[in-house]
Amino acid sequence: MMKPDDFEFVSRLIKSKSGLVLSQDKTYLLESRLMPIARKRGLKDLTELIGALRGGDRNLVEEVVDAMTTNESFFFRDTKPFDQFRHVVLPHMIKARAPKKHLRIWCAAASSGQEPYSLAMILDEFKSQLAGWRIDIIGTDISREILTKARAGLYSQFEVQRGLPIGLLVKYFQKKEDQWQISADIRGKVQYKEFNLLEDFRPLGQFDVVYCRNVLIYFDQPTKSDVLSRISALMPDDGFLFLGGAETVLGISDKFKPLARQRGIYQLNRPGAPEVDLTALEKVQAGAAAGGAAGAAAPGGLAFPKPKHMQTGAGTTTGTAARPAAGTTGTTGTATTRPGTSSFGTQSTQRPLGGTTSSTTRPTTGTGTTGSAFSRPSGSTGTGSATRPGTTGTTGSSGTTGSTYRRPLGTGTGTSAGAGGTTQRPGTGSSNTSGSNGTTRPSTTFDRSRFGKPDDKK
Image 1 (cartoon, rainbow, N blue to C red):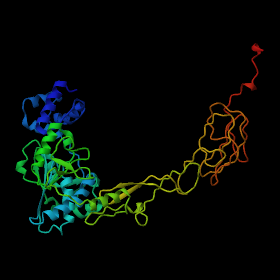
Image 2 (cartoon, rainbow, N blue to C red; image 1 turned 90 degrees about the horizontal axis):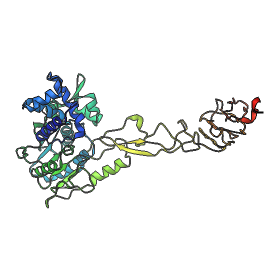
Image 3 (cartoon, rainbow, N blue to C red; image 1 turned 30 degrees about the vertical axis):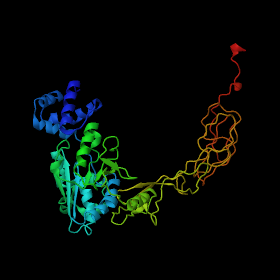
Image 4 (cartoon, rainbow, N blue to C red; image 1 turned 90 degrees about the vertical axis):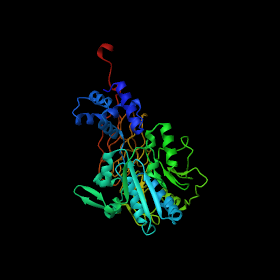
């Protein structure tokens, strides 16, 4: 267990080197990330490791900071920032930068490269419109090890399945043993540099578009404000900034303002910030919200079609498991779709309220009607029938006396609904008898009137 003063030392060290803030409740995280380093170096425990850190071992400090930075990333992460780039940012830049034909994009905290490579694939789809252009995509990260992976562009099967459409996998990747490598052409569109966001940004140059997503959440308020201020200094009046879904500039910096009706994308808060056309983007978003046609994509976009088994005709999706409306068996219900979105195009997932004739039904309790389920009456006489969907039962006679708490499947003289086959379980009661094919279940009622007083009490 890490001592409180050791935790304070390590957390201060990490903040000074990376900006990452670790609160006291992250002790477990610190221990889990540092123990593998201690074992690799042959150190007995964290106390020895922290002793070496206090001694100023620079390589060890770098290893520790590297271990504590989060390298979670996947292709086209969250979808929306890439739709915004495709339908808002890129059309604006193609017009505004037409005279010089030069576009620069910075992916800060690029991790293993999925974000910059996702942008490179989108830009490749627009290569006819960008013929003769110079496009710079710079990916930076504090971790030297993760940048080595990014440059190689090698990903596991699990990594390429996270957000990457199958069409793009086939088009831009080659199988290499048990991994997939992105094409040399796409790799050549991205430059990677080791860089710390606490350092001076000016040597990086100016950028038209900056992706700094899911980074600020790890910083304290002053550091967030400082990073945003320095990013704004790198950007022209019509530049665009992308932040993570849980991040905002509101209350932190007045250098940026949110794009109207859009989350996660910001313009500079300057007089020169242009009005941008959101029509194409909002049309795509409206289509996604409505379910859209299977595999549909806006012009210039990329289609990620649904699997064939999920498509019927013009983009209609059918559900398999059904929950029918209460009190009915074997009826056809109407499915209510809850749309979701895939990385490209639209994909709907259904949660049907109604079922089909082949579905499994869950009927509700009824009185003398079909579709009664596991009733637990507290009264003495029941009038509903117990049915199991898809089965035919016979009618049991009504019980005369019942216990205050029973567990019958049903009592009474209602009729079952189903399509023939098995025997009904009749209700339990002291005078229950079987129907024509029914099998009686003995009463669970304890009737004191059937027993006389003991001889010594008479």
